[in-house]
Length: 178
Ligand SMILES: O=C(O)CCC(=O)C(=O)O
Ligand SMILES: [Fe+2]
Image 1 (tube, helix red, strand yellow):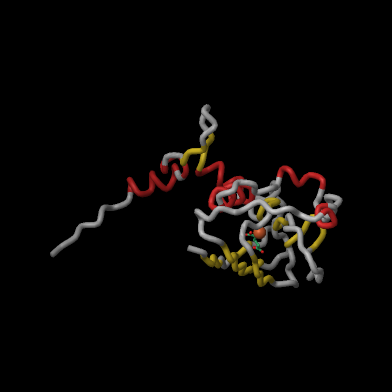
Image 2 (image 1 turned 30 degrees about the vertical axis):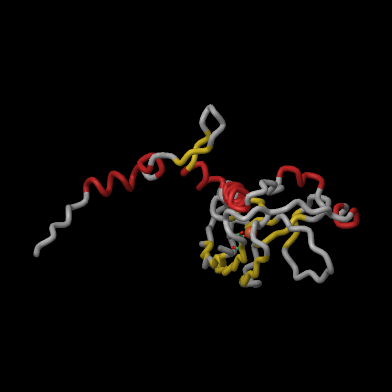
């Protein structure tokens, strides 16, 4: 089924700047057909990549044809939390996406390093999964591991949240009375 996904995200403001994208979003293209984003422009943080690979603050664009823009969210050090509400309009996860011939004038706008960023799997859900892995690398590494056979597998729950597991074990057990 085609589906709509909405996130309400709060990017805490941090005093010092930790490693890149720990509390932001790593470079990625959205895998939705269309994304509408509400962000607080006074806080900013959303950057898009230009055709020559540079990162610039997002501005509203008016153009007749669009190449999916690679973008990222910076760690927020503005002193104010960043709230954003993206709405993603997606095809069904098992939808087959046909290849289309892209006119040269559009291809010329594609950044040089685009090969690393394409979501080329013909099945939408697989591209979406790759996109999530790319955007949230730290979370992905926590939850998934690539085996020697090259297959990506979910990690055991206790490896993802060792402290949480411990907390559950040590917490008082609930007793149900009838
Ligand atoms: O939080 C935002 O402003 C956008 C996040 C984003 O790019 C995404 O989730 O795909
Ligand atoms: Fe995005």
